[in-house]
Image (cartoon, rainbow, N blue to C red; front, side, top):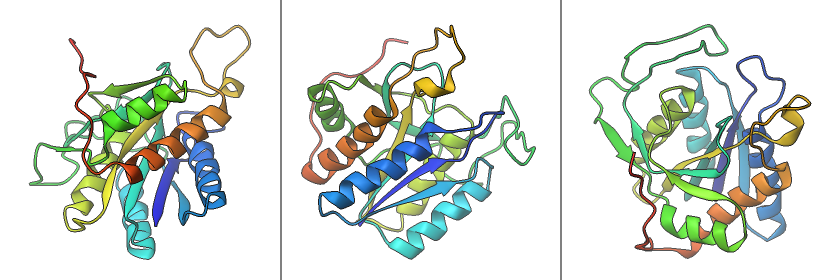
Length: 213
């Protein structure tokens, strides 16, 4: 079973392409005969992890792909690492703005994704979808969920998971905006590609996708 998640709108936005993409990707995968479900997470520290953990318990997936919006990025970002730090520049949807607080008290400093991020990168590039391996998921609710997911999966060794950031979709942008965006159809297909490549890959590829800064 495959679980995809996205977030509700935040920061004054009326939509969040991560949720629309996760929902549409799950539908695409079901049409291909795969058992896939999508769950919308609240953009709230703490609550988001609780909803995610409830979904893990309910669906008991073999693969989890969480998605979030990264406005300003121009590519699908395959996140490599989650850090044990909440440091909010803006309030979440419940008015919380933690500063320098651990996601999990006493947890390790970081967790790596267990998705084959390099294989997913190659598959996205083959599909002509702009993509990159990202070395930071930030310190807002996206990283909070990514870390919470990987912390939960330490007790589910047969389940792989990770996090993907998506850019804006064009409908979110005001006229004249120069912010990068990708069509929703492409965002949904990107998440489906990540799932397909993850299911097909037991050992990740060894290809360069690092960063110099």
